[in-house]
Length: 323
Image (cartoon, rainbow, N blue to C red; front, side, top):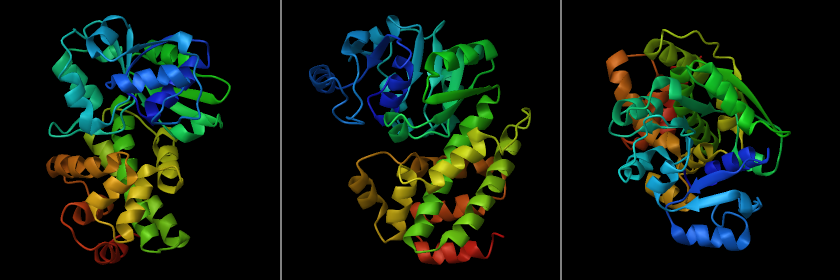
């Protein structure tokens, strides 16, 4: 469910094992061009697909009706508008969310949103977490993913469906933890990019990222204390590292542009891609009003992105708060 780079990467992972898939894209013209060329014309266009093994849909209800497992890979700001078209019941369907964001306005992680508003059973939900960039999947560079579900049998089943020679998988029951971590690592990648744009060096980046994992740990363990987790695992620290440092990280790129003096709006237009961390910053900031976790890096990003405080001033203040 989705026509972007991450949806394309997940389709490639699944089809590497010879699986057939149904694929929903909202734009019929994108589907027609896909059928003509054998690749997604808009994202990861170097990846070739066996079109005979794909059934395309531009009608979301037909896609849901004819599928048992629904993998949602749309940007979080657009999830509600996609689901607003849904009239087919999701009850009894398996839902996998590959969305690394929070549903805006509701300020809910995606798994909670599906359970509350669409009646999906908790045991029928799984979450995909990193560390993994779609661009490296396209290049078939060895990558790792974590699949989380309260239902370990479902997590294992889905992990086996996407594991292939260039992708290894882990499974966990810590659904809420890896979802919140997936949101926060994007926020911290923006902070990393801002510092890069301001020409802070590698030494400071190391301090920033080490403080980021501690800040992530404080928040995740506060909002979800019932689950055991090790924040040094790949789904937490690993995903943070790749998002904070990689040239493929759109959140880091977005932050770097902000640090160089671009406005938020001009950065978004220039990228032509969604930086989930922009929306995640505001959502986590509002959620944290309830918990009051100490989060100086999140606060700095919020002040720069939403309060329009100059990046050089805000980051200079941040350097006095982290160690």
